[in-house]
View 1 (cartoon, rainbow, N blue to C red):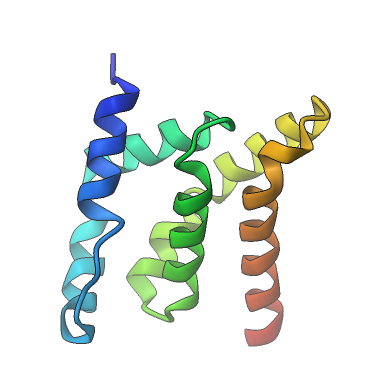
View 2: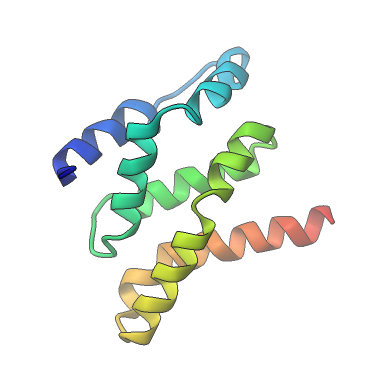
Amino acid sequence: MYSFQRAVKEINRYIFQTLPEASISSYATNLKDKSALISSLYKVIQEPQSELLEPVCHQLFEFYRSGEEQLLRFTLQFLPELMWCYLAVSASRDLQSSGCIEALLLGVYNLVCIYT
């Protein structure tokens, strides 16, 4: 079983790092191969009470907004799970837990509307 503490370490190791502009492309290309990171992100998304959910949603939006094709695709792979979690939390009427997910989904939607 994949522990939540391990998920936190994976996310901190790969997601919340500052990169120079020149290395973003190679970072984005390598990100899709980080299966432990992807599993960790799914784990955080599935825990609406997680303190990491808000910064993860923010970072996924920044990835999408960056315009880097690989980062955009990296974010898109999580949209079905984010949508499911948003609907589940909304149905339970625990709307405080869904604010960051809602912001991410609306932000991605708005960017799609702007660029299409």
